[in-house]
Image 1 (spheres, rainbow, N blue to C red):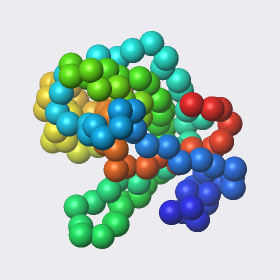
Image 2: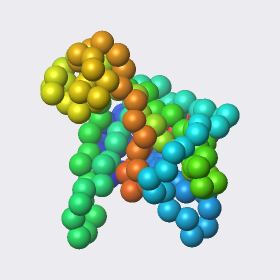
Image 3: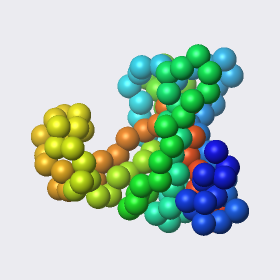
Length: 133
């Protein structure tokens, strides 16, 4: 993980960040979440993402896509649970499959708008270590 991330980010000064549930013993389940003040952009357009796969042991799908932006922002669930969430913004979707679920939901074509999504707690984002979050 570290070797892949440092090679793609072209620096050894990196940090890993994930979505965190801030309440002890709570889990991030399906709730309505409200964004709270405190949005922070993570370093530039260089991001490496590790998506946890559904296996009985740790297997990740890893990729580095540009241009992309990553953010950390506080969320509050309708049950009161606070979350420090990682959000990814795909700035150029022009080469995505037009049948991708995001385009079906948003009713747009690839390349027309950026696509944002939140990462679950078991996914990891690696960024250059330039700013604190």
